[in-house]
Image (cartoon, rainbow over all chains, first blue to last red; front, side):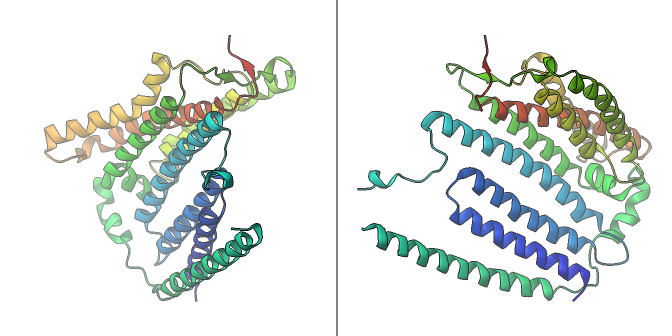
Length: 102
Length: 237
């Protein structure tokens, strides 16, 4: 068990917390937040892997930097979609209303 | 189905899901623990190729040279996200823009006057620093984006600000420059993004400068585009 393992396990824990949130929270913004927590966990794991050896490995760092920008753009688009959904239907979830599924 | 049985079904569902995720976490955790702390990464290969990269910082060398196509596609994705957010807003709907607190607060106006030049200078330094220490287009673009978001939320820029030619030019500049360089390397060197060694440093600096502008503009436009959907402000005339 090294510091790298500790950071890696923290990444796994964040990923699982995020995954649980994505699957259980109906509110779209909460889903998005959960998704971002999960991806933060993946990034943390990748950076932890890069910390092995006598000096940091720049390739995973570059991948994480790229991943952060991609997740920011995807999140912005998803927030835009959620806001449009709210504007169009007044709903903030994708759930079918109980009275509709008769 | 009665309310009570629906409730208990939900509890069972949650518990099963939680157990599944805990099991997944344990499996992933044991996989992490099995990773050897000895490095088998690419640090050595990167070090070995640094003399042809044109820059002195390994991260910048990987981002802009060795794996330049990642960065090329990434700025493309950012551009697509901007187009996607823009296309979400339907013309027939009334759009709103944020209220302009700047007219009501002299403190905000003076504060912005002090903050903005510092942000712009730091952003410029970041691009330059990227060639020999941590920094580069993304950090710089994030700073410029922060400046743009601050400008919009203080009311100095109107939120759905013009999608005019200047904004579009800023958005596309990084991608166009990158595509141009990529096409040039294919034509003259025969391989995608293989820079000639003597110009590598200059090309990377030029690409990074335009990338910083594009990333800053894209982040600002994404914020403005999304913020424009939340109608708490005045109606646009």
